[in-house]
Image (cartoon, rainbow, N blue to C red; front, side, top):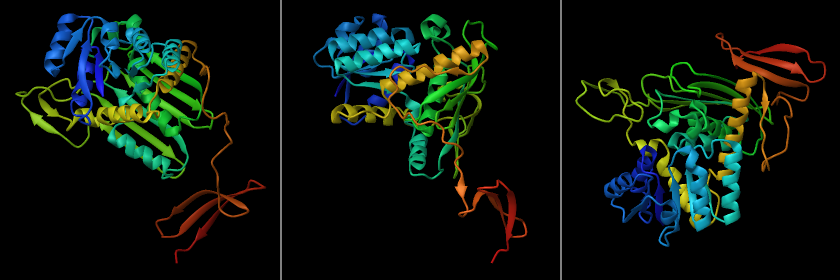
Length: 397
């Protein structure tokens, strides 16, 4: 499969580094950049046969099968339109749009053109996340009640991120999109997000957008999603997830403290994404593009194109994430729970059916079971009819 890259900056190079190690039959052949000198540099670095500062020219080439968008947020829609015009499958970096309305237009463009729109949400493809999702789908932790995701670092690398008009927001657009989709996967993407309560603040940086945010997302089945994001965290990039279910718990540390620690006096170079120093105790990452999910992500996307199936993350998913972010911004303004506005919901319409209770027998619900220091087993039960709560102790046999 022949690939064209739109963009030549930080994320484009991350993508290219993973693509050159792909399945062997996928080849990055061309690049577009608004700056022709940067396009040439990118092409030289990755040994590409063609480069240009004309987006339509790159998307329209007959030898291109799929286009990857790694451009600033305000250019995503124009890039998707160019791909739709050229009938080329398109994979777009996160967030899909600056708003839900923008994302919905992009979703409509790819569906009307009959091309695949893949949403490049890399953190939903990390090895730890994929293993965790298998455990959830296998029923290892029961019904997911609460999923929390946190991403925090010292701030993005490019100037446009800090411009509210170009980016569409601050830390919530940049990082919250990851966290929202991670929690949404754990809870179940077929479950409708209903309401959002959100706090935002600009705590450190002289910008119009927020550099910190915390949000709660209610889902129709009673589950809760939570995100914590910040551009004010010092010391690298902190990626953590926690999932609580009726039968178990998952805790993930995907970056920063992953079991690889090193001390240096500062003689070396690059350590890891968002690392603030190359001296002292450091936390390098073994295979960064793989551990951040890029390898699995592109394999899934290209296989989906070949097999004419949907990838794990689609433009529709990107649209839902943008709809949740819109509600979060509205909530941050009003201080109230705000409804998530979704046009054309494609999931379940079931509502919360109440607590996920467990029966002990025909007469009682089981509230809790524990083993005491004495070795006795204690049961806390509730009568199904009267509501009486009682304790039953069972001597260990």
